[in-house]
Picture 1 (tube, helix red, strand yellow):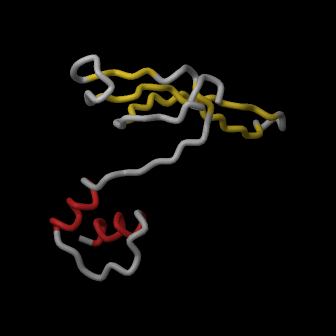
Picture 2 (tube, helix red, strand yellow):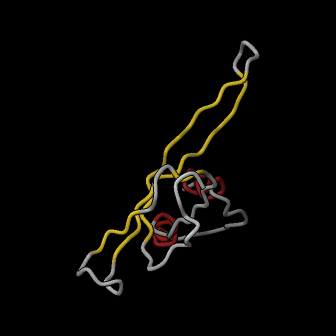
Length: 101
């Protein structure tokens, strides 16, 4: 059990004195929320799950690029771009959500 307590401590649950296995399972099945700050690689596309109407359920699909800069051992700057595919379950995106924004 001490290794499980260490895992919980590393996940930011400090001050946990005792826990049950079901509490650990709830930690692993919780919703994760992420905020990505980057640039849209393409215009968002609407994918409808039902009919063609605007009221039918669906999802927005888009790609976002994030950059990370670091110094190499040689002292020169380097930049790495990572692409993220995003699926947004919702009805409306802002009109400003265009490629390059």
